Amino acid sequence: MTPDLEQAHGNLIGHLKCIHRWASRMSDEQFDFTYHHAAPTGRTLVTHAWQWLICDRMHIEEPDASKHARVPDAPADKAALIAELEAEAKRWDEMLKSLTPEQLDEARHQFNDTGFDWSVRGCIHHMLQNVIYKNGQLSYLAFSFGLDGTEIYNAPFPNPIYEEVFGPNRS
Image 1: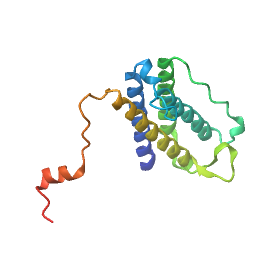
Image 2: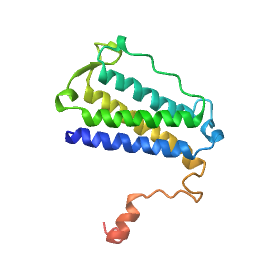
Image 3: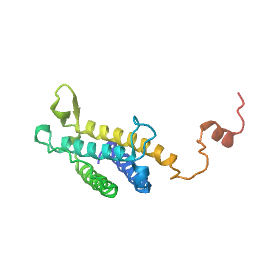
Image 4: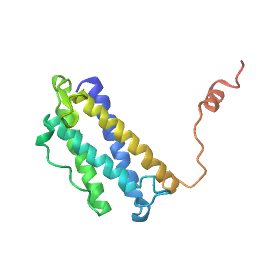
């Protein structure tokens, strides 16, 4: 793998594992809960990540989007949906490991839109951005449900670390 593909691969697969972990820890009620009708549920976030993984993989494997099968509907069963996400993550893992440097630069047009040029590398980075975003949204839900502990969240801001390492600010 090229160095940039190796980094993208590690990030993509790592964030997909986090999505899998958070979704698996949620009860069915938590998975379908939303704080507001304009906010996504865990189910929506997992479905969105899974369906775009399929779509962008098809764009990578077949440049002509008119030949793509339609993306399947999400299973109603939470465990089945999480299993589908995991299976698609494995397909991405295998696909990314097989791509050559030349293939990364091949042109692609999302949904055959010739006004929007990107490359295979662009498809990969689109998916990486999407999965990072979905993982962040799902993490927020998981934290709010107490799935990563129930104590008050204390963000690790940088200045206390500077003070711990170097002492009080002397400026």
